[in-house]
Each structure stands twice: as structure tokens, then as C-alpha cells.
Length: 256
Image (cartoon, rainbow, N blue to C red; front, side):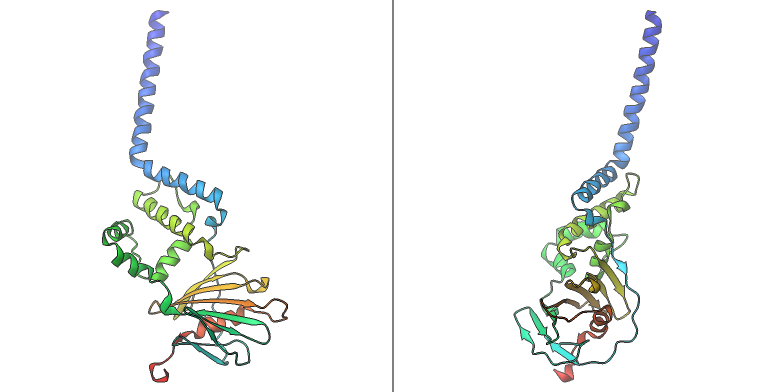
């Protein structure tokens, strides 16, 4: 009995030791990935919208010609008739229509150049960032927002590559900080129409404010808010949104 007990004890000890080595080996190889995966699950439980990624908008037809609006050395076509008087502030210009629609256009020169700021404000931290994103570098503000908004907890796994886990973890942290952009109804879209690309927050058919963040080929950042005044019968359609996005551009130098 004593000999059998000793054999069973020795066998159990060997099995336990093997398990310890296996767990230790897993921890060394996949510990960081597992931690990132667990963190992503916890963040998603507190902020479910982290799982939301933008849905692509179809390419629109050619933008119809309409009244042209100008503000801050930029211009775009209005989807509606009329000649609303621009009301400016330090960072934005507002156009109010008699039919109730309101366009708020933010001065592109006042928008933060996030990528440039990272490069110049703290070179040491930027080098860490560049190392994490070495395989898939981020070279423009559009690419930064595209990668951040497209990140989701479901993309992480305990068995994924270490660098991919670090990258996904960083993108999700950014997405948490960008969360104020997302509308209450959760409608979130992306578009890439050649000369203009970016993101639309909100569905025009819901009669709620629409926020736009767009980028041209030179990485100029255009931000709009489109809404309808309370009590008015005016409405905003997706075609209206598309018209603005397709026509926004810097005013030609000769016309300034």
C-alpha cells in the first residue's frame, strides 16, 4: 500500500510538474497576447460600441451642381437652394437655411494633425509607436482613423502574434478615446471615393445630427455637422450628404 501510494504520488507530482512547465511556457509565449485579449473583453463589456466597425457606403452618382458655399479658404456645393449668410467663429462657420437645415463646417487649419504631433512632440514615444506599427505603418491621419475605427475586440486572440496583439491593443485604446464621435444610434459608416474618403457618423433618415470626418488626397481633414433646426419640416438625405462630401476642396488660389 505504501509503495503504491508513493508511486501514485510520484506520478501526480510529475504530471503537476509537466503542467507547471506547460503553463509557464504558454505564459512566456502567449502571456502578452492573453492579457491583451482579456483587456479587450473587459473594455467591450463596459463599452459595447467598441465592437462596432464602420460599414462602407456605396459610391454615389456624380454630384449635382448647386450653390457654392465658401468658408476658411475652402468651398463645397450646397445640396439646397438659397444663400444663407455664413456665421463664423474662431474654428467653424455655420450656414442656416430657411428650410431648417444647418451646416457647421470646421476650419481644416484648426484640426489637429495627430500623426505630425506624435512625431514632433515626443520623439522617444513616437519611436515606440513606430516599432509597434513597423509591419503596418501609419503614414497619414486618414490611415490612423481608418485603423482605429476598424479595430474590434473580436480581432484579438490569446494565440495571435505578439506584435499584432500590441498593435490591436493600442488601436483599441485609441478607439476608446475617440468614442465621443460615435452617434447615439450607433450608425457608423466609411467611404473611399478616390479624391475623398473618411467616415460618417449617423443615419440621415433618423433625423438626428450627422457628423462627417473626411480627408482629401493631401490629408486635409474636413469636419462637418449637419442637422435640422427644431420644429422645422426640413430634412437631410444621404444624397445631400454625398453632395457636400464630393465637392469639398480648397478654394483655388486665384479666387482667394
